[in-house]
Each structure stands twice: as C-alpha cells, then as structure tokens.
Image 1 (tube, rainbow, N blue to C red):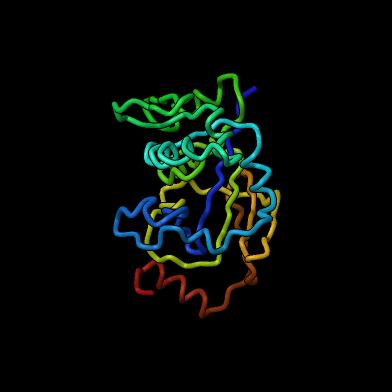
Image 2 (spheres, rainbow, N blue to C red):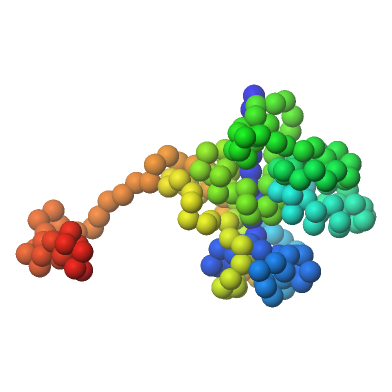
Length: 222
C-alpha cells in the first residue's frame, strides 16, 4: 500500500509561509517578520496537535532540514524533538553536504516529483512535509499530496516565500476537516477533488450590452 503524503503549512492570510518560527529562521530576501506564528499560538491547535504527534516520517527540503537539524536534536525534552529524532527524515537535495542528523536520507531523482513518487511506493510510515516551500508547487501539480492542512494565521505579511507560486496545475480541493483556535488560527484540511468546476449566475440570454462587452474582450479593447 503506498504511503500517504500530508503537507501541513503555517501560512499568513496572504499565503506567506516564510520563517514562522523565529527571527533568525530564514531572513533571506530581506524578510523581517520571522517568528510571526508565536504570538498567535494557542494551547489547543485542534487537528494539528494530533497530526504532529502522530506516526509518520518527515519529507523536507534542504533549507528546512538545515533549520530543523540545528534545533530539534538539541531539544530532546520537547515531545516533538524526541519524535523527530526517532523517525526517518527524507531530504530532497542536490547538495553534496552530508546529512548529519541521525535517520536522515537523501532523496534524488530526475525531478522532485519523480523522487517523491518513488518514495511513496516504498514500504514505511506515511509522510509529512513541514516547511519546505519549494516542494509544494511540483508535488501539488503532480498530484502527490494526499492531504493539505493549512494553518492560516490572522496576519498579512506582504512579501516572503509562498506555498503557491502560480505554477500549480489547476484542481479542485475538498474540505475534509476544520477547526478555529481561540486566537483565530483557522486549521483547514483539504483533499484533491478532481478538476476545477465552473458555472455562472447570469441568465442564459445575455443582454445586448453584455454581448458588446464580450466583443470588446475579443478585440482586446476592454
């Protein structure tokens, strides 16, 4: 049975996911709001708590791996740190640097999607992406993410790395779970649901003015 892949993402209202954990986590590109998650964290974060303390292996990009491996092995008193130490960490990277954190494995392939597709076909625990903004566009487009959990925080950040970069293959998503924390964080889980459905609210017989508007669109003068 293939492994299931879940992506759990901390995002702002405008889709930024860069450096949620601290000021020095990822200041690349001049990002100056590192640590934007902490003020909105609550004791009860609903389904995310169950997910993060569940049974899985991690799938990470190299930069997120570098952040995690410089922090979590030194925080074994934290239940998350102890869990991360024990499980396997699969890292998509072209770097020749050794992966020094125990139970870490380099993934390589012609593309990120092909490498992850091969990993999903192996025996083992289900997989969880944390951070790793570069993984989402190709894996979503390839249909490799089975569930997407978005933790949307009540903040607008403007600039920064985003989960969606405009390159994704269009597709519908189905809401399968939702929760709102006491501090206004919306935890919503989605699963792929085929092609994008479309429709309209207008009448079947457009007005003359609407027909003229459509002609302007065709002419490029609208």
